[in-house]
Amino acid sequence: MRVLQFTDLHLRGDPEAETRGVKPQRSFEAVVAHAKAHHSPADAILLTGDLADDEHASYPRLADAMRELDAPLMALPGNHDDPAALRAAFPQASAVLDLGSWRIIGVDSQAAGAVHGEINARQWEMLENAVLKASGRHLLVALHHPPLPLGSEWMDRIGLRDAEAFRQWLTLHGVRACLFGHAHQAWDGEVNGVRYLCAPSTSSQFVAGSATYAISDEAPGYRWLELHDDGRIDTGVERVAR
Ligand SMILES: [Fe+2]
Image (cartoon, rainbow, N blue to C red; front, side, top):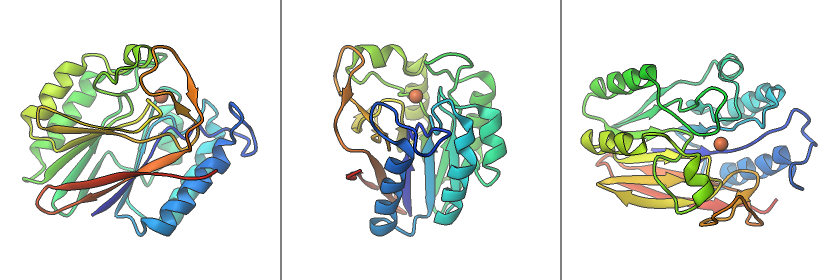
């Protein structure tokens, strides 16, 4: 099963609007064109938050672009998203996707009005239920906020709260991998049997390992994953010229 992760699109209402010298809409279009040419057709698309840069007029345009890719969709909110507007714009998206011998579970980690992430009681309940009904499928969990420190002081302060409890839960349930965004950088590491993966932003990147907020001039990108029937995962990050 081939899965694509696009994250931290930060789309603006006006498709020609620039953020830090980048047009997020055009950057995203270049990323999607690359994915279409090199990793299509996909069996699922995961959007892991900050789809809009607080300008929710961009949602319908994004929803149309996703319909064109014609794959099951997960659209998770990040700290810059409006969950209600997002749900309304993406009726085709779902929080649980079953793909052959895999189940992908999406968690809403947005804490209203905050930059950091949290998993509230309702989301915990959803997670528990989704795992209970997984029928032995291999598990992959996706959310916006990093559930582990990335060695970047400012970013680690705005990651997921109670991340250790969440990581223990993932290990306890034998979750194969956890996908996240928010950090605008590639990450691939393992903690207690769970693989943690982040994708670059489809717009602009943060400097990895920086103690303070810093923008890097690295190219935008996305992550592809090949989920095998036996639970193995092949994955990589593609960078795309704007
Ligand atoms: Fe974010």
